Image 1: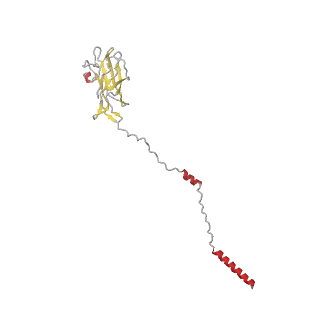
Image 2: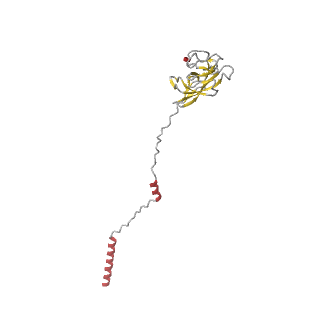
Image 3: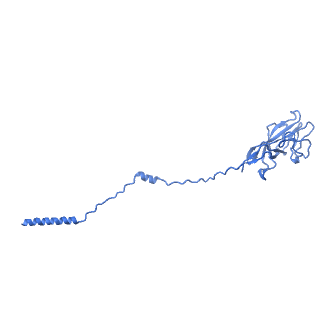
Length: 236
């Protein structure tokens, strides 16, 4: 009987202990949140990427559009002053001589070629009195002109100075003012035999004799030509 009571008490006590143990709050499991390490390639890509670079505008201004050329029409007169003498005795066909523009060339009241522009003339024919049976003769034309540092070829009429035979002086000296003989030249549409003028004051060619009746165009003589072809000058 006593043993039965002791067993009953043990069972009751064990049940109480079990109930107490079940009634305690359970421990909350710990949840670890791990952050995945950033891959090396992603980090490198992020760190190494540079911001978009903006293109720097070119500071050089664009070139100005080319200007249209100025056209000097065929037939335009060109009056030049000879800077060095040429004559039928010492000069030959193909020889060049220096001259300068005596009057500006204008178009519509605007100057396109200034007075004093450098001009190069050329001897196209020279017949010395001692070598040519008849009269001495020299023919010249213009070869080129320099405008604002640029050289432009020319095609113009020509001027011919000729003698009329022994004892007869033809032409006018550079300082002369009257006709002594005949001045032979060429203007627009003219050829050999066309008169160039009536005196040095009118711009006629100055011609005289050297040696045995050779013909000379003296320095400071004004010669009159006309363009045969249009002349294109680069616009400014």
